[in-house]
Amino acid sequence: MSTKKAGVSRKKAREIALHLVFELGFGALEAENVMTERLDEEIMRSIGGEIALYAGALDEAQTKYIVTIVKGVAENLEALDEQIAAYAKGWSLSRLSRMTIAILRVALYEMQYVEDVPVGVAINEAVELAKIYDSEETAAFINGILGAVARGMEQA
Image 1 (cartoon, rainbow, N blue to C red):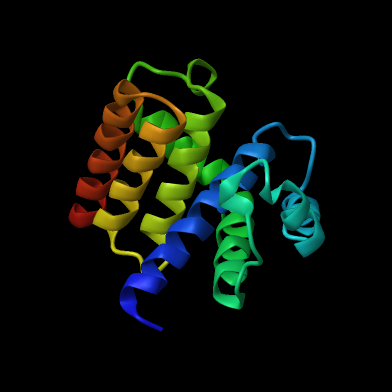
Image 2: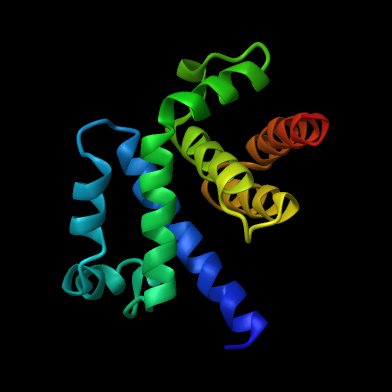
């Protein structure tokens, strides 16, 4: 598998993971239920026409990555949210949109727990997702928070 293909594969998996982490933010479903429901191939096919992202079956690496991210975020939710609160100076979690929180949770998890994702890549991908799902202002806000976290990680 070429590096470019792996990057595209990971990018799609990250974006799907973001959607699932966003769903977790509503608190109605547990990580296992969200993944079981959403990663079912038949469901993916049925919504593929509506959402291009979900079109086509996921390969094993994509599915594994999605599961890793969603379960990891769910298991570390409290710590991730504490970090967001600590670095989002002057902003309480209740003032942030659910999508902003989901993007930050995914990025922070990748930065700290996924060894083959460089910190800079996690930050860049989070900023790009914010531009798609939120706004330029939110992307800058997310970049600032994640940059501060990265600097803190370097000093630790």
